[in-house]
Image (cartoon, rainbow, N blue to C red; front, side, top):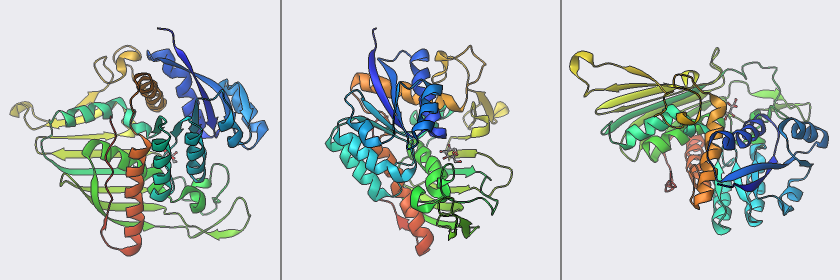
Length: 386
Ligand code: SOE
């Protein structure tokens, strides 16, 4: 089938700009998608840096103002890979201009900003998606299928962590390129919006809505030099965040994220315990799903470690031969492939902005609870189609 072109305008050229660009290039090479992404333009404040990025990734042109990018007739889709404080303004303007919008996670700094973004994509009826990439790890897609098939029975517990250690040094400044995640005015929050947001999005997808939370946050380093002002300034982000919650399905859960767990670089883990079965997964071994089924024959009952590399595993028939694993970048490629398929069929592809807002409501409730030291309820948002 001849593919139609889909012209992409990317905003931002950091780590996420690279993961997204790679995904636009690779998705049509490995998946039978109805659209061919064309890397039309990359937009960044520095023309020189944008040109270098354009050369590396094959963007045809550069812009230094995202408004000009959005105004271009030859752009179909705006992909936002710039810091969190830019998401809402760019996404709303892109939706008004009738462009499809993809946005890096978290959707926004606060649920209020996120809600305005959802309202914009819904009023202007434009295709939209948030880059919660871990939903496209084959092992986790398999886990979702097993849960949806009812193999776990009633769910009792969910627990999940995201551990890193890259901000322990007191000398690390806040703000500016690469370090805006430490500046609350840009990032919105610390590990709650950056790391826990992944744990929460995954949990909402696998285990349904969260009804209430009680949380604790900590900022270990209270002041850091700001890269832009050169001055020592108070730190407004949470360095560590933990919360307990109840899901609508009455299961209870425990979550933790930190950038102060010495020795851990990106240890995202999750476990779910049901009446009949349990499963656990971790990002350092992302191609394995640990699964226990109580209904197995007694003598042989035990935890299985399933190597998710066979052609009957999600997405795997499109990759190499059975037994050979894939990695982190493939989750973004899968997300682009699914998005293009959805656009071709005229249907939404999750996680939509509405799904991103559901996570923002939970992160808002966590930050509120950490202040009030009370349980806080979470407004409900209907999950979008899978
Ligand atoms: C933070 O270090 C970070 O890069 C997050 O921003 C990403 O979303 C996560 O996937 C890995 O860690």
